[in-house]
Length: 460
Ligand code: 6PG
Image 1 (tube, helix red, strand yellow):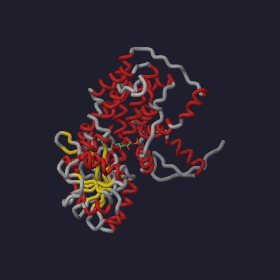
Image 2: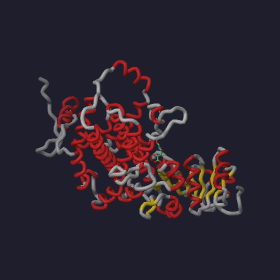
Image 3: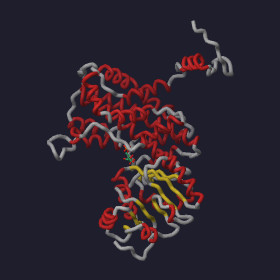
Image 4: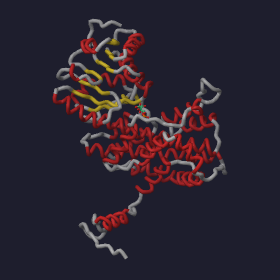
């Protein structure tokens, strides 16, 4: 497509999978979009695929910038070429600290910046992602209509809304990914037990997750899991999942969630366990060596398989809820600390569709936050506390069994630990304080008197 006389409403830099699909999605909704990529092939394939005058793939940066209506709205970094009131939109998985820095740099030059988390993978970008934007309200006002047209919809409502200033959008996307890591790990642990202890074959694994997805576990991640077990490998006669190397890669967003949660002192143990397990999966060679040295118990399954599978559904339900609870608790603290002024009802609402962690639970989270805007933790909501209490027995049973079998389920175990610690008015931290005061004179507080105290501990 050649550049016509027209001025395009939005520019996209980077025509990889997400960029290209977002351009096509916005063009479908009637907007005119220019795209640019250093890779000429990507520009060519955009023009070919779009084949209409709402999309223009530019050959170079100059042509791209000239094709845009002023003040321009451009996705990506091109500061030297921009002018006051232009908007740069970063739609990548950027670290929120980088987003903060960009805001500081750009605002000095009068250039607007929107950091928007976009979730939903290739399919979402093309047909409707969940979008998590942060920036000034004024800048958002200029792109709101396009974002709303491009985003997924649930019950007629777009899965996008203004979330807050500066890096609020990228922060929310980061936590989204942390929850994504947690849920993926939990599902993989259920698979581990089914496969290794119970010997469930791929067809039956497909059936289990399919059935789960028809009930209260209905979610994108459970749904794709059921599909995965049916996929044949094109190169062998096996199922594809069985020829995939057991090393999980990561681009870092889950790790950032754990890192910032540590920074803000918000416990997110299920997410931490998920990050550690991805790391541990990378030690394939060492694990192969260790398998020959470090022996554990044998495992054999006894009991009613169907009942066990049903119980496991409750375990995943319990653990998934606790993972979201950890993520929302982190958002709540971050909102306070970074002045995001997040509306958790809105976050739950825009996560209902388009994104990787969409699930029927999001509607219920929305209700819980609507009922109590100051809810400290989802586990304190009546509806969820009831679910957690009812399902805890199943989790205890699985944890006991898995540890007896020697099957690692650190995500589920961390979740149960979180639940059991959170629900206790007393924890043994008094002993830790005593130890700190003993070796370092760090002082302690008392339960019966205000103030800080130090004791000359008796060493005998
Ligand atoms: C999404 C995904 C998306 C991407 C992740 C994968 O919301 O659409 O989260 O952003 O698939 O970057 O992350 P890892 O490479 O860290 O697993």
